[in-house]
Image (cartoon, rainbow, N blue to C red; front, top):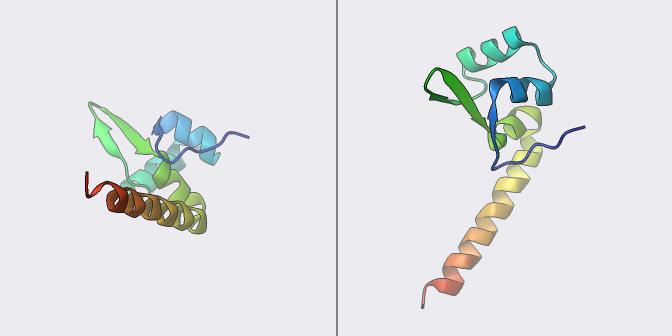
Length: 81
């Protein structure tokens, strides 16, 4: 089983394989706004963070909270530089 990396950028094909959904389901997720993506040229790019949010909101929240803690500690340590 492949692992979804929060900071990785995925194509729709890669996202389909990770989520194990069909192309039509992927289109529905994108069109309905359930899965947010950026359009680059004529293709969509999806952040791993978005895939995690769709698959498991709890895991996404934990990852976001951890990131925010690290960010705040870094800001606190480096503010006097």
